[in-house]
Image 1: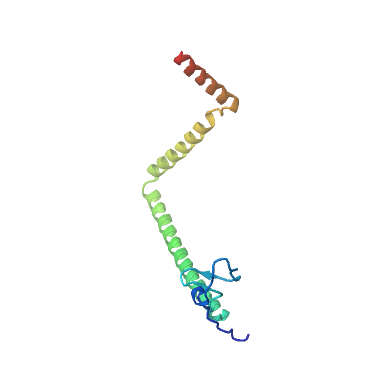
Image 2: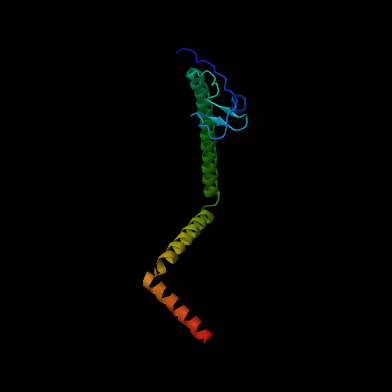
Length: 137
């Protein structure tokens, strides 16, 4: 790829731009009063790809370290649970039954309430409105 030519843009004031003149199709920088495409640095995709590969490798290493940490914590929790169950079998059984009972009551409570239809809600709203109007009179 041939090297790009660097062209500096001239400010609008130096050219003597006048009101009503057409602005060329380019970038208009209001801070420096420059019109045109500013010179771009040379782009080497190999450098960018290399930097991205380094970042990917660093992220892969961080994920691997985090996975190992989670595995170690899970193993330790399993060992502690096993030791607790061996030392206190009756208490562990009662605790598991209490948790299961709590879940059962929660699920039963959700299922026992009958869903109200839109018709019932609308009827209740009309009744409330009627009661408020009657209260005013």
